[in-house]
Length: 284
Image: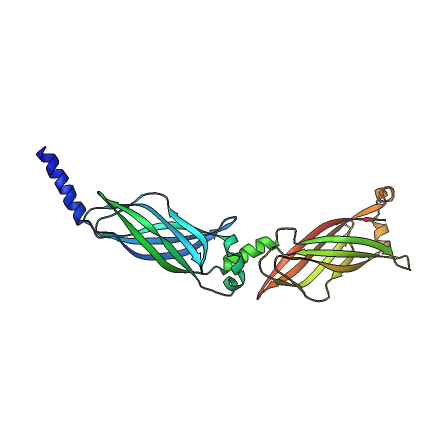
């Protein structure tokens, strides 16, 4: 009984003398890469344990804010031991949802160092005591590369340019056919851009050469999150078409064209080359 009393007394003594671990800094903040929908950030959560025995950081969570908007979170999923009288670096991985940054693309692209706020707390247990370590810090990230990669991925998605509104008629010489087309430009980005140039080539058979081409005369301004149809006229050489004619076209009274091309898109000072590929069916 006396031993139990002594142990319990010692436990109470150490508990009453225990000190709250101290937050020191957020350090080694780096962008680790991109997932399908998030920017992955690594950092060191640095704390100091002033006690003569080790303690445990049982849980740590943090929220990441850009301005007043919650854009990401970070978690410590496993308990970490804090050595006695020592400063400990605890690696934490955070994820910033790319979708939550959409509205800020213009300003994020314009900055080489964007400030984010980290807010949260850590739960530390020491014998019978439990402490909360508050976190309210600023970090700086260069998100420009990640945003540019996300824009490039979106532009290369494959459906930014589609051929619409097709009609055809023969010109008076009978040696030419004019196609009236519409190129639908779909901007899925929350930022406007300029289509500097666009060139389209028309093929009946990609292995036998083009039968027509079209180049945009002047730059076109595309609003954010909008679609627009650009009207174009294309003149085909009937002679070139006849050289590549298939018997099935005569029976079906239609021909299938492959349209290949490229558009150069400019967002602020950045340029992106976007491939275009579509297929259209035209009645003969």
